[in-house]
Length: 152
Image (cartoon, rainbow, N blue to C red):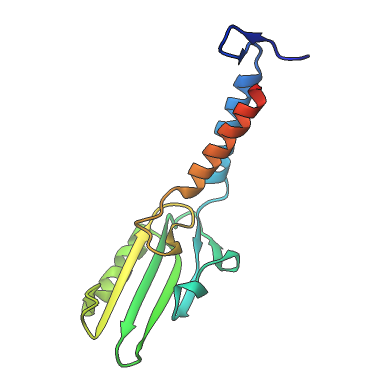
């Protein structure tokens, strides 16, 4: 059966658009919640480039709802140490407290450390506070484009 169009709006009169809307909502929930959170993961790397990419993606456990990036600089060693992993809110607070003995994020000091926690799929790619919900945005745009194409 070919869908019928009404008026000048080009809207379909059968249940096809409703089915697409339901599919769209279900796909968002599947991508955002069905597989749990994923974060970039690495240990003791000296550059962020060694912490990103598909081979550095970690699936988080249910109690880990955040992605964490910890950066420590030691002038004695003359380099950065970057760690990325899944964490809970309590884990983020503990990591921040652990770095309390260093000058927290004061990069003018000889030794400093920063902890950045973020909520969202793969949000710890670089700075967690700058990248949030990118996956959901792309899924939404793609689903809407498919929906509009189906209406033609």
